[in-house]
Image 1 (tube, protein in one colour):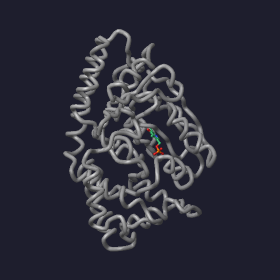
Image 2: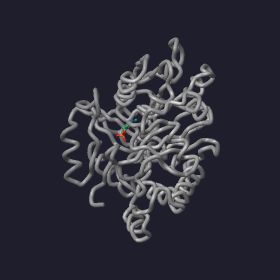
Image 3: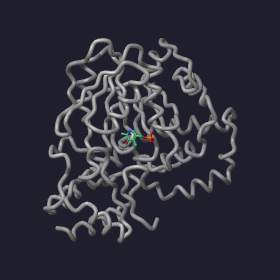
Image 4: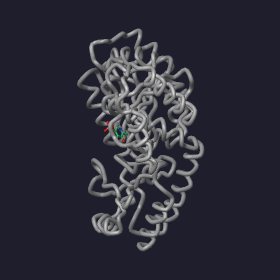
Amino acid sequence: MNQANFYPGPSRVYSNITEFIYEAYKDGIMSINHRSVEFMELMRATKAELRSKLLIPDNYEIVFTSSATECWEIIAQSLTVKGSQHFYNGSFGEKWASYASELTNTTNVHFGINEKLPTGDIADGVDVLCVTHNETSNATMISMDSLKMLRVENEGKLIAVDVTSSFGGVNLDYSLADVWYGSVQKCLGLPSGMGFMVLSPKAIHSAENIGENKHYNSLVRLLENASKDQTSYTPNVLSIYLLYRTQQASKGIDYIENKLKARMASYVDLFGQIADIDFLVDNRKLRSSTVLALSAANLDVIRSEAKERSIVLGSGYGPWKKSTFRIANFPAIKSREVEKLMAFFSRYS
Ligand SMILES: *Cc1c(COP(=O)(O)O)cnc(C)c1O
C-alpha cells in the first residue's frame, strides 16, 4: 500500500488480503454453491476460527448479514416486541435509535461524551436495551464494567451491543450481552460488504419465541440456516473466506488488544506534547482504544500536510465534523505506518 491509511472505516485492510483473494479464485471458492458441502465446511471453519481467536463462547451462534445497518433493523423487527431503549452519546448510536423508531417504540437516553453509561431509569415496556460499545463518531468506549452494571440491573431484558469498530480489537466479555453485531471493514481489516451478529442462547430463544418471519432477514430464518452452517440467501462467500483466512492468521484477541493498547499509550504521550492538538474526550477512562478523535484549530492544514506525505487521516464525524479529525487504531495497521504517523506529528510539538 502506497498510502498509510488511518481512516476509521472503511479502513486499511490486512496486507495478506491479495494473496487470499488469489487463493479463493484458484480454489474455486468464489463460485461455490451456498448449499454445498464445501460451503458448509467453510462456514463451520470460519465460525470455529472466530470462536477460538476472539474467545466467543461455544453456545453463542454467529450469523452473517450485509452490514451493521442491517443488524439495526433485524434487532428492531425480530427481537423487539414492545420497545427498545437506546443509550447513545454520538452519531452511530443515534442513527440506530432512528432506524429502530421506524419499526418499533423507542426510548432514547442521550448522555455526554465525558459521562459514563447511565444504567438507571429503564422505561416501561422495553424489552431490548441498545448500547454502542465503541462510538466511532467521537471515539468513546463503554467499559465492560458499565455493561456489567446494565446486565445485573436488567436480568429479564435483552442487551444488544454495536461493536462495529471494536470487534476484533477488544477482548469482549460476551456473557454481558445477547446480541453483538458489526461489520467487517473496521477492526477486522476486510473490504466492506458484510456484517455479523453474535447471539447468546437467550437471544436465540427470544427470536424463536417471538417467531417473527415476515422478512428475508427475519432472525429465525437466519438462525435456522446458521444451525445447518448455511445462509438464507446467497451470501458474500469471498468475504466469509477472507474472514476465515485472516482470523486463521491472527495471533488472537489478547495479543491484538495489547498491541493496540501499547500503540494508544504512545499516541497519548505524543499528543500530550503537542499544545495545539487535544483529545476530544477529556476523561481517559471513557476514551476508545481503537479510534482517536482529536481536536485542533488548524485541522485542514494538518490533514493536507499529512496527505502530502501519503498519510490519510480520518475526518471528523457528525457534530464533531468541523472540530476534530480521527485516527484509526485498528489491528491491520502496520507498525511502520504508526511510526510514520508519529514522526509526522512530532513536527508539531
Ligand atoms: C461504521 C459503523 C456502523 C455502520 O456500519 P455499516 O457497515 O455501514 O452498516 C455502525 N455502527 C458503528 C459504531 C460504526 O462504526
